[in-house]
Image (cartoon, rainbow, N blue to C red; front, top):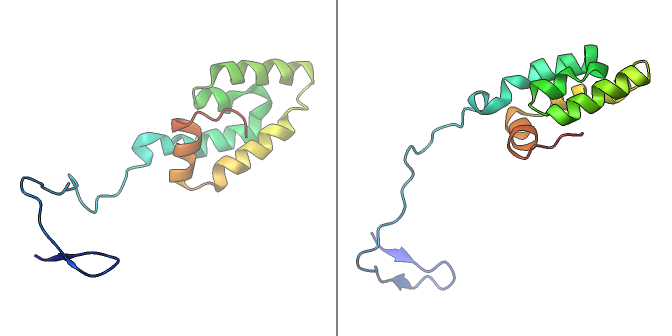
Length: 111
């Protein structure tokens, strides 16, 4: 198998002992549900319906943010639900991959 330089098209000499990396399972799709995307719909709906209680934050594992949302919700008589509705819509409109990367892997607690 001859390999060629991408710039000048000159043939490349193989390096002895080198073996190119091969994927363990080429073509395999990432299972975003197993990585946490299964929480997306639950968190989104809870944020929209009872977001002032901070339930969606607890579902995602954000205990501190959940407590803050709960306390603010009680103190403001649920006015913070506007923020929660926006968060719920954001959760539900993200793709599974984007949701997992943003809220599960990168732990983005707010918006």
